[in-house]
Length: 125
Image (cartoon, rainbow, N blue to C red; front, side, top):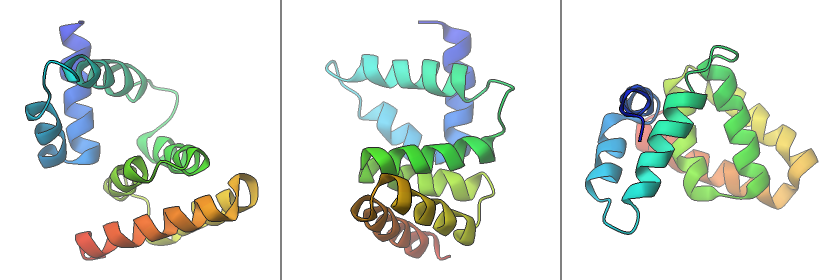
């Protein structure tokens, strides 16, 4: 493990997803999934999310679209919260999901809308 990238990733991951969520994920890691938590923190958050080519808002737009295409509601929930933290509005998130309805399928987009509503309610938005 590259400790510098891990630390950078941990900072970014906490800023985007929230320290409470990230710290719980790391605390609950065990012998089975600890390596995966370290990989995600170092590679996804330390290396890719910190690249200079795209800002965090753009990365959030992309993640919401790709996660809808893959129909990954658990990850959509996490990344809707991250998108809000990165400055996206409810209307922008709505537009992402409307766009994905055309290219990824209406059922996937409906699931994303459903998940996003839960997050908005939890966040008081």
